[in-house]
Image (cartoon, rainbow, N blue to C red; front, side):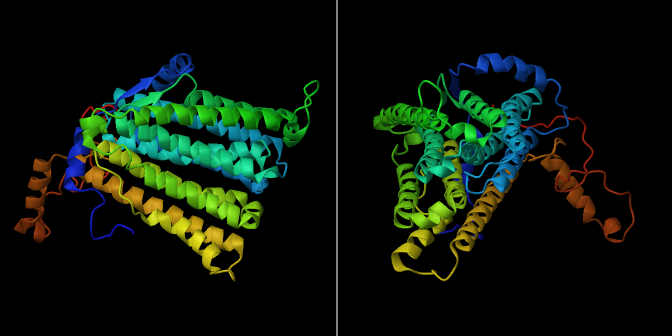
Length: 427
């Protein structure tokens, strides 16, 4: 299943299409025009030597740290955590949201936009979707009802996948009136309510209506998920600009269906056949499958950007296959559930990390750009001259003047400008 390390992840045809890729989006979000004033003001204060990808990864790291601190105090999503952890988690979402909004603006400002930046953005968003969702599950005490916890976690990840499936078909990423920014503020609001009222706020009936805030949150979530699925599915089924309604590049609009259906079915299978395991370790279960969902979303983004249909097999499927096999054949039952889930989560994490590093390295080399450094990449001609000089007799003998150009584009190369010379492809 896994890609051979002897073979590159992307073919030459995919790399060519990637270089030609142009980012396109339609943003109808209600809050974005108002937040844009703040983001434009703030991006002017970002130092030019900071790479846009650093902002992207920085937002993911902050989101991960604040969410993991909350989970540390409430690993079952129902144990009350210190109130400051809820506030910290909400602050982490705001910082992630801000850096996620700044990276593209900073890339255009510094002329460092590239397809790799777009891939970084969406890849980090896939993981952050899982983290934000889990954080809200903890703050709303959804551990008291494992069914709704899993429904919310997998629904959020599925909707994010559908958004990119829609982009894969139409070629344009579309944002509705109530979309990412609005949902993030809703999540921040939930954390603030827990900060003020504590974890017990969500399970205490409200006066007059005699309904728990947790119940309101669940129904808000259900309505939002159903509306998003219906809207995005209707756009997907209308077809794309290709021949006979096919996707961009004449790709099948249904090729992204199998990865999503397989992961969701396998999660449902494990949930229904081994409810005790899920009930005892709900967040481990959600994280293991969430990382798998993040990887197949990354593959969908790359399929869109390279105009290539998604492959059916993937090394990420080892996690759901092993979990279903353990239940069906009764294998590995001697391994405690929590250790088994930790091992699968570790495999999923290493698998997506290796995939992302190999993919980004290949794209970096093909586009001749840097990933995190703003130093310009030496031209091919300069590198060839330097290679020839390094192989000269005087160099081999230890004499001569030290080379001023660092072969291979090391970060120690002296830049002529703080701005990179990347092609101005919109991030």
